[in-house]
Length: 255
Ligand SMILES: Nc1ncnc2c1ncn2[C@@H]1O[C@H](COP(=O)(O)OP(=O)(O)OP(=O)(O)O)[C@@H](O)[C@H]1O
Image (cartoon, rainbow, N blue to C red; front, side):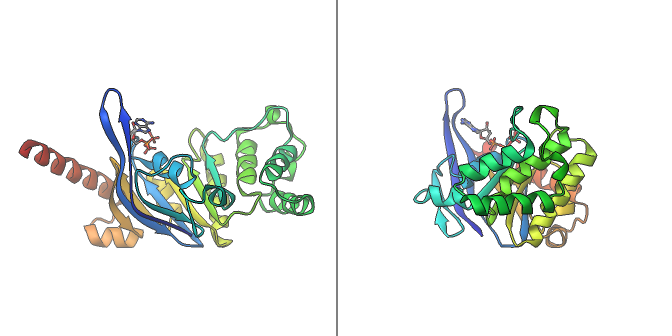
């Protein structure tokens, strides 16, 4: 489970001065749920996910992952999460099996448990054909499967996917989304960040629309449609952004 409360993050940028990547963001993700962070480039998605995975520290607010605070217990948080982005690396000179095994060892899994998990993960993801293939010889689809396998080898309760389908063809992307979907049924708490509306519509139980570091709307598809009287997600997305920009402009004119 993940809880994010009043999270803000700013950077001191040489050119732009203080930049708020996140402003007072709150949400939670429950076990067995896929929570979608939907926002355009620069919305703050990556910053939020980096804080969740302890790479960055919050400026304000509190983030708790599986009962551990990201600032005070980063090691425990890292043991409880799996992180996958679009460019999760595959090593040319390792086979699929060797690479996932290597990551299992990095996570400190005892050898007998590791061997059990390797068989389990390769079976579940139906990737025994990649077992002995070197990274340099893998297709994009194979690489993605190995990336997921290395993300889940330590069986973490929380999974974070940052634009995982970027650069993939539709078939590979579809297979990846199906794999993520099956992780939900195993009771994982999953965050899925993307700027692709269709992915969110298909996959996510709840959605937060994020823009310029702020959550503009949050809920299930049905709740969002009802609340904003707009059944079309894409239209809803553009309406919210337009409304936000108009308000910002008015505020700036007043100052
Ligand atoms: N280290 C940094 N220094 C200064 N500004 C930063 C830094 N990291 C992020 N930002 C700014 O914070 C804002 C949010 O960036 P972030 O990368 O989180 O967005 P994003 O939603 O992930 O977008 P993208 O899909 O383009 O990665 C942007 O304005 C970005 O320029």
